[in-house]
Image (cartoon, rainbow, N blue to C red; front, side, top):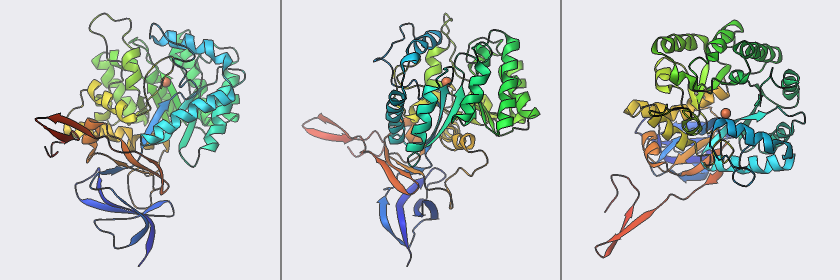
Length: 430
Ligand code: FE2
């Protein structure tokens, strides 16, 4: 009888209740069946817990991570003070410093079940220090995690000295993807010129596009529609994402309807960052304060692919976080009013399968035979229970190899002369 490299026994899949064994050989899923007759060199018992494809952090800034509170703080908590504080410490960063901080954040994300990370990297720096650092780190940790680097012009392209040249140089110095920030340019017209440059550069270099777009409360900020049109003109369906897009929460209903329709037709994806945007947006509002997130429920219902990002871990824009994408998903479902049973399952897909579609356009992304064996055994029995419990990732598997493990949290309460164990599940024995 065949002996497989690894078998995960008694797994509960996101798609159904039937317990499944997962066979893994040569780093790929080789078999899925209720009871595999083979044996494994290594066998893991999932004990009926959920096994899924890994989380995808579709948007983070690893160059600025872990700088707060040691290096700087943001007293007002605003987006603009965040840019100011980052600009103050940026001249002092070094390659080893960026690598050490980013490596730490990546290990945190892996421990939480994330194996694909897309990091924006500030290229408004003649030295391109952050890019050089993350390029090195990307190769050093390639066995552990897939890291994509976006050339991100934090301080603009047209309004920053040599902005275009820096973007082009960044692509030749290791950036994978063309970024942008059109709403930061001085005029609407310059924002459009920036996007035209971004798309022409991406097409010339054969790259994906991921633009910080309309990250403002201003309902007049409408660069996403320009991105949709340029995606169509350049035949880049499936290869373009707009990140943040928080101005969408302020559009009138008629315009929102039109925009969702053209987004769906264009084949663009939207990447929402609920944790940071819920605290950064609405800062000029009295009450009620706007929610600070793209309307992901409406976008999802319109057939627009939506993925999620953590965006910031302990940096000038967001002082908290451990890189647990389940927390971002949890926040997203609350902000979007997506507490319906199917809607919560869709939120989990945004954090996993949808993210993979953005990360690797055109590649199969669901758990299936032939897929690379990147898997997570959760301490929960379903995606919805994972969103309720925010459990640990018990075992994280990369290409058929265990790369992270965690013990499930256990609690006990003493009362009436006895000790009661709790795991916050309805079937817990009292
Ligand atoms: Fe961002």
